[in-house]
Image 1 (cartoon, rainbow, N blue to C red):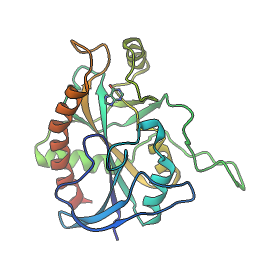
Image 2 (image 1 turned 45 degrees about the horizontal axis):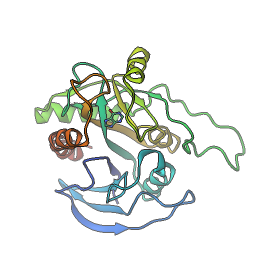
Image 3 (image 1 turned 45 degrees about the vertical axis):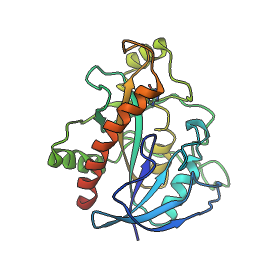
Length: 246
Ligand code: HPA
């Protein structure tokens, strides 16, 4: 049974080196996950893979069934989740193609199903979310990056925006004043739901573009795709080093 899951984001809908053993279409009390759960062996370890936006990359960030995605992973025995996500870089050193292992989150999303604790409760539940990412898994990712000779930013505050549009320049200025270093659309409620289920969850963020108003010109999908190809190659290297160590 696989205890490690990789949630792939934009630019990572498949894992080339995964020797696939099974594809499972599963239901949950919260509806359907983004797609089948792919099981396989990566560098000698059993892992499962789920494409957050669906395998054809058709589900926008605000329509993702985060509850079903996390639930299904927990149901099949997953304990550790590495969530790969494309982001915009706000902090000056987070240039396109670079990798960040964030350590904090500010949530700006709205109207998403953001908790399992809302119906049929015997008591009201508040999870501790002071440190939103699993520090053990974060440290494993950082150690693997070092072993692989990959430069990664070891911390950063992820601002989770609603999307699917990108931000205005003024919104990015506000995010920066709030303390955000990077901005993405899928980090929440994914991280909080993982914590509610007691799963160890860390993110590997790939900078696809300079956030709005920071670059020399407007943000184009071509630029994003180009930078993600470079960034996701680094992610694959990182995964190949971290998986055997978990
Ligand atoms: N903003 C929000 N989400 C993103 C961005 C961005 O600039 N780039 C990739 N995902």
